[in-house]
Length: 173
Image 1 (tube, rainbow, N blue to C red):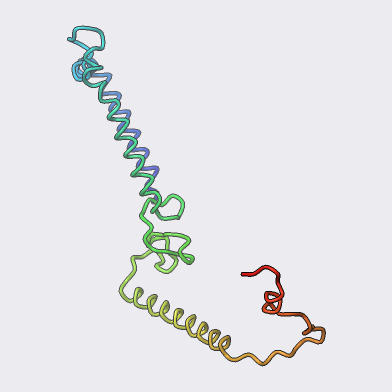
Image 2: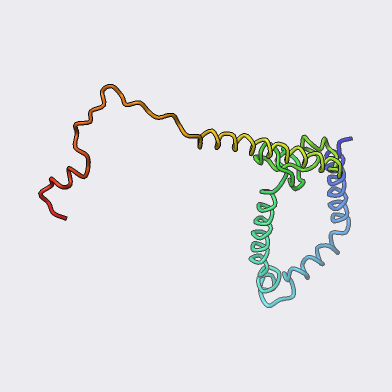
């Protein structure tokens, strides 16, 4: 069952009902708005608005900016499945994606059970042990003593070494 069309239809009906009630009781609603926004019974036109309700416009802007910042912060941690609003708590694809339990491939749409957590943890430990075992084998292979290198046929040994060059230099150190 698709919930989005039902919610949209419900909100549309509520909006239409509010507009109809406003039109039917327009005098009472209009008078209420005028009194509460400060546009009547003041010393000048709109003085009551700007010294009352209108002075809060800046505060609404600040609250809107704070709300937008919180939304962006939360969005950073949302599930990476397009259209999902849940918080992504479970890494997938080597940590490239954060997914909720409904979209994570290991959980298959169900919340993780204790048995599933134990199985995934055991598989993780086995993979780590395998990786460390292979790294130890590579390290032992690299630390093994290499065979003695044979001199190349065109290697010249008649060149002076660094100590001979320094002792022959006219600059004293």
